[in-house]
Amino acid sequence: MGFFERYLTLWVALCIVVGTLLGHRWPAAFVHLGSIEWAQVNLPVAVLIWVMIVPMLMKIDFGALRQVGQHWRGIGTTLFINWAVKPFSMALLGWFFLRHVFGPWLPADQVDSYIAGLILLAAAPCTAMVFVWSNLCRGDAAFTLSQVALNDAIMVVAFAPLVALLLGISSITVPWATLTISVGLYIVVPVIIATGLRAWVMRNGGHARLDSWLARLGPLSLAALLLMLVLLFGFQGQQILAQPLVIAMLAVPILIQVYFNSGLAYLLNRKLGVAHCVAGPSALIGASNFFELAVATAVSVFGVHSGAALATVVGVLIEVPVMLSVVHIVNRTQGWYDQRSPISS
Image (cartoon, rainbow, N blue to C red; front, top):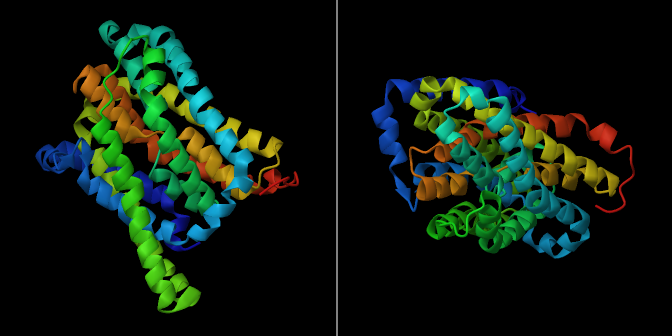
């Protein structure tokens, strides 16, 4: 692990501080960058995500996807956490903390809206960023790609009914354009680019040249992650400094559900004898959120200044630091995890 990767947590912390201060000092510049979007999908962030995940996708031998059925235990565990546990656990945590524990300190007319935002955040599993987390915990790239593709397919039909059930409303306006474009920009386009680049490199130098390319692109990928952090925190710099107490209270149930769901997925995979290279990304996919879709849905249903929109934004703010801590736990516990002989890879 190089110097850059070894101190990644420090660079993340610095980018959070820098982004927040820049967003507070020059809000107009970040408003302009935030306005460069298509169906509420921010295009500068999308480009940075391409730079982040294309090198990771280039590692995938797409012919290996034919063997992904071998990972059915890991896939089943992730699906169970994503669709049967996470949305319901978040609804329960939101009700407990925001209505009871923190209720006296929150604006009473916004509590329901805050809880709705948390539910929206948990109802859709993450797409693009999980490639970063999987790479950092040395996860099986073919498994990660297959799991993300399957979750995207399920999300198209399950997101609206699940949110409607948990929010207790008969219908919900899902921003289908945002959902479709997000999947296209964050999954389809990077896969096409990575597949084309991998094929070209392999034809013109084989595995040795591919390894050389990946070594050069690795630092660029992490630099894009850090720059994206500056942008995300810059977009919300004024809100963070204006409502720090509310943001801290909203962060509590999000933090608990991330650690609960990732830990549950990790332990279930170990119990089932799943290899660590599958259990790691399974736990990370099980815990992370598709915050772009959550924010867009909250804005379209409840309004841009609603408590729901703010709650989903808090998910954006803590996603990277929290998931990095989960990656650290997964990596540090591999020895303990592997003490149980895997049944299936």
